[in-house]
Image 1 (cartoon, rainbow, N blue to C red):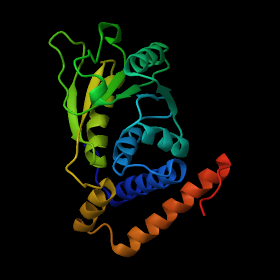
Image 2 (cartoon, helix red, strand yellow):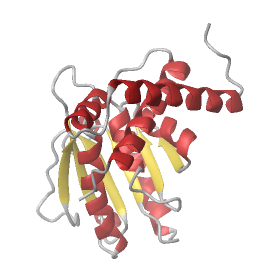
Image 3 (tube, rainbow, N blue to C red):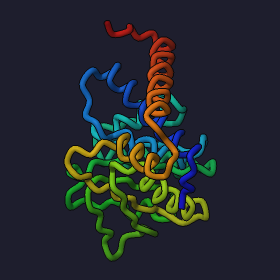
Image 4 (cartoon, rainbow, N blue to C red):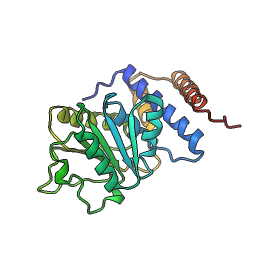
Amino acid sequence: MVEATAARRTGLLHRMLVVRRLEQRLMRAVPVGDEAVAIGLLSVLGPQDAVVSAGVRPWHAVGAAALLFGGDVTNAPDPAEAVAAARRKAGAGGCRIVAVCIPGDDLAGATLAPPACAGLPVLFCRGEHLVAAGRSPVVSVLSADSADVEAIAGAAATEVGELRTGAGPCLLGLRAPAADVDPVELLATRMRTDHQLDDNALRAIGRAAAARAEEVLERLGATRAP
């Protein structure tokens, strides 16, 4: 279980807001809600680990987070390429975990963990409900609300812990949130309930996040929006 301290929650909230601001500035029109997946997952991976993504949503947020906080991220054109890239990276050794992120609708009826991945430290992350086949080499299957950054971090931490012991692969399902659920507001409300946040602090975190995103954009040579 990931500890719900004020400091950790503030860090998660800040990072989600930074990713949102960066996406808004780079993409100009992005849906709300993908930040929890990106930050929840990356918060439990180490600097030696890697992420391979397939598709656009919600995995484009992972790339934005990697720009901000570092990380080895590969964007694959389709799920089959993503699995192949993850297998290559995991097979290269180096004590790394490889998280492969695939939208649920792109893998309907497909095998998520082919025999070639058996024993490799791969964390499959897939949207919607997950079912592991009877003869699948998957070690464990957990799921979390895709709008709940703490739930994602907790489930991912459990499975990453198993992978670091030599087990693998594991499967993390990301359930679609209820309509109009904002992951930033979800965490902020939880922090207010636990007396870890007030409106002034939230505004300060938002200002700091916007400033951090602009610093990254300047380093990338991006032009400020008018």
